[in-house]
Length: 257
Image (cartoon, rainbow, N blue to C red):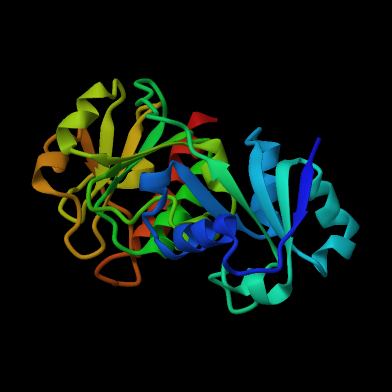
């Protein structure tokens, strides 16, 4: 049965804890839980079987029947004034509902899974967009090399649009950790004659997407079984990494069937 508690003080211990969690991009690494905001992310989590440990909702939003159905899925609910919810929100226009979720403990690399490897990507928007493309094209694992933007940070969560909840996400890896993968690694490169859509791509495989400015590191490139180029007849030097990832994942899916 859902426990519903009205809260009017900003000094409430649960709100104090959630404010700290929401404000710290990597705070989930210490707590093992993550703050998500907005009914879209809550629904995405529930659809993938993630339980809502704690929901925070504004008094005004309690009048919305659709949001009330989300509230009923939670073990515990805090009902707060709009002003208190703004203290939790990273949005200019707060969504008026959010939740705390417990993250899986110590996820393991799935050796045979089609994967994306993120090599020190810095931009949270790029990381979230790649997660979204991975989920859309049926990839179920994303592995992040140490130095990549925090996968469960608020900005990556917003850009991912719910993709997180259908992916096996592991971060803080070294290049050598990828020895656990039993699928070939593929990277894009402007220094190869092999063109993406003219090469028979292995399936499953792991696409390696490199740092926005430096590309794929030497040690990681050495692990790749194949490098391919993406045609750019417009003459640009390179594509945005999130765009490149979407093109590569689409081509992998196209060749499958």
